[in-house]
Every structure is written in structure tokens, then in C-alpha cells.
Image (cartoon, rainbow, N blue to C red; front, side):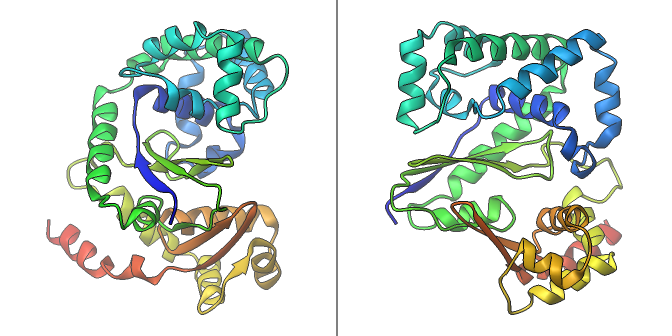
Length: 301
């Protein structure tokens, strides 16, 4: 293996994740936070600003900030990152984009300016006031996950962190950067370049309320409580299937299958085999190994 996995975290990562989670309407029902969180946050913004944020996010849809966050020095708080990011010359912006093989339009400096504008508004009105325990929990998760890496188990650590994502990268890949995120749980989001892959994985940074089951236990039991999801798991037993093949076997709409696969992925019950743009799925039975013990511990706790 010619590439390595690195764990990275900084507050600006979570700021961007929370902003995308808020604006990305297509994922609201799949997120743990759900539409109730979206409605609550909406009250903190004037309608004209909400529209502006949506317009800017659409403009910058193919403009990932991960390479810039990775390249930024220092602690990378939101303020520190924006100060550095807005100070980059057009040449420096293109240099970083080129280093990662990122396809960017001619108006890169203009995209940077509008992206920075929206990030600052989001931080001032929402992100700067989130529970500090979220950031601390994400820092602790990143440190603990980094300590698991020993130079020989990179992809095992990647698969465990992402609850079942397995990469089959091209020979050009040099670095896989994984970052814990809280706001978009249980989604796992990746940006792939020639030499780099950036993946943000779900992390329950805050503990469950006293007497309540842990989020991971809830995801697993909920995933197993649905007839269609159990049928999908049966189809995947001993097989590796594409999304199209699963849709054909289950005979439900693509959107419905997509929803069920998100639930199964969140529970760690499927392996997601990713090779370039090709994605297929297989059963990940090890997710069930500790289920009886977890249920017993919760009931007796």
C-alpha cells in the first residue's frame, strides 16, 4: 500500500459540515438532527439571508474547501481559517487547487470571496454558539482514532471509523484524510482527488442522556426492525451488489432504497466498496457481534 490514512480535526471542518448539513435539503430526513434542527436554526436567519446562503452554496457546489482546510496552518478555528483563506492571492488559490487536482473555474477568487462571506454569517449566527462539548468530543475522537494507526492497519481504521466503507483506490492515491463530524450524523461524506481522499465520518460527540440508549445502539436496532432492510441484508448475504441490482431485487423506488441503505450503512451492517465512481455493497455481519452484550449492558445499566 503506497498511501496512508491520517486523522485530522479542526473547528472549521465542523463549521463547514454543519453549514452543508443545514443547506443540503436532500439529506435532512436522513440526518439524526432531522428537520426539527433545520427549522430551529432557520429562525436565526432572515429569509433574504437564507436565500443568499442557498445561492452561494449552489455556486460553490463543486468547490470543496477540504484541500484548503488541510493546507491551512495553525489551530484552524473559523476566524483563523477565514483570515488565512481571504488573504490568499489568486495564484496561491490556484496553486493549492492544482496540488490536489481540483477542477476549478476561472473565477476561483470570486468563489472564495462569496464562500467566506457565507461562512462568516453562519459562524456569527449559529456555529459560534454551539455547545463547546461538541468540539471537544470531536477532538477527543480524532486523537483516539489517530492513536489506533500503527502504519500497518490504515484501511482497517478507515473501515471501522466509517462503519464499513472500503476503498479500492487508484495507484496515484497518496493520502486519505478522515475527519470526525457531528452535525451530519450518520452520513459519511467523501471528496476524492487524484492523490487525496477526504472523508468525514459520523461521530456521536455528545453522550446519550442519562438512562437513554446510545445512538449507535439505536441505529443498529432501528436498522434491524424494518422488513425491507432485513430483505436487503438477505440479498447481500454472500453477494456484492450494485445499487441498481439492489433496486431490481427489492423492487422499490431508487429513493426508497437509498433511504434504507443510509440506515444500514449508519448501523455498520453493510460494507460499501468504493472504486473511483463505482460503488457496490455487501453484508458486514461483524456489526452484530456485540449487539447482545450492548443490549444487556443497557438494560442492566
